[in-house]
Image (cartoon, rainbow, N blue to C red; front, side):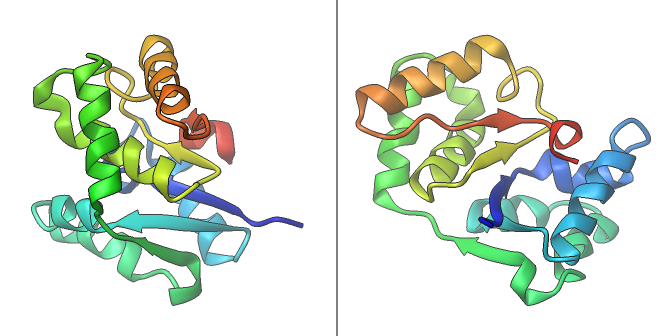
Length: 150
C-alpha cells in the first residue's frame, strides 16, 4: 500500500503546542513516527521554524529519519509561487504560504496539511491554487487540516 507523503507547513508543527490544535497535530506526528505516513519538510519550513520557540523547533528533529523527506527550494517552485501571486490567489504578504503550496505541488505530495484557514485551507484559496496548477500543467493538490488526516 502507498504510504501517504504529506507536506506540512509551520502551523502544523506549531500546532503541537496550541491547545486548539495540539491533539490532531501530535497525532499526525505520531503517524509519521510509526511509519504510517511520511512528512515532507522543506527548507522554507526549516527557516521559519528557526524563529519559533525551542519546543516547536524540536518537534521534527525528534522524529526518526525515515519519517521525513526533504523538499528543497527550486526555481520551478518559485515560478509556481509567483504564478499564484500573479493570479491573486493570495496577496504578496502571503508569499511564503504560496511557496509552501508550490513546494508541495512540485514535490508531488499527496497533500499539504495546514491550520492556516485564511490563506491555505480555505475553499476559495484551494480552488485558486488548483486552477493555477492546472493552467501551468501541474496536478491539483489536496489541501487538508491534520484533523482530516488523523
